[in-house]
Amino acid sequence: SYRLTPDMAIIDSSLCDNLPKGMVALPGIDAITHAVEAYVSVASNSFTESHSLESLKLLFDNLEESYEKGTKKSREGVHHGASIAGLAFSNSFLGIGHSLSHKIGAMSHLPHGMCCGIVLPHVIRFNA
Image (tube, rainbow, N blue to C red; front, side, top):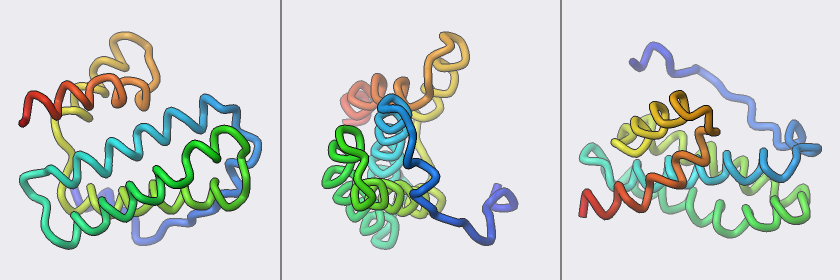
């Protein structure tokens, strides 16, 4: 429901300055999944596709460095990429991958981002 969509978001990457590597990697995979699912959604459009592609560029350019070194620049890049992916999927909806990931994670007590990374290649292959 769009009633759950916030009017404003504060994007402050300094909140992630002291995160352990696992808390950087798995949300990063979740953000990549958001962008990919938004891009291939049946409700995608030129607006959501451009946001998805920009998000993926930021995530691929910054996630590894954010994980390995945690630099301010890379953390900001990941934060911005994840936020832009949020813009994309909130206007095109997510797919079966996220639905499966929520169920698998709840049943298996696995982190959501990990489940997203596991199911995404299978969902892409299934939908192709």
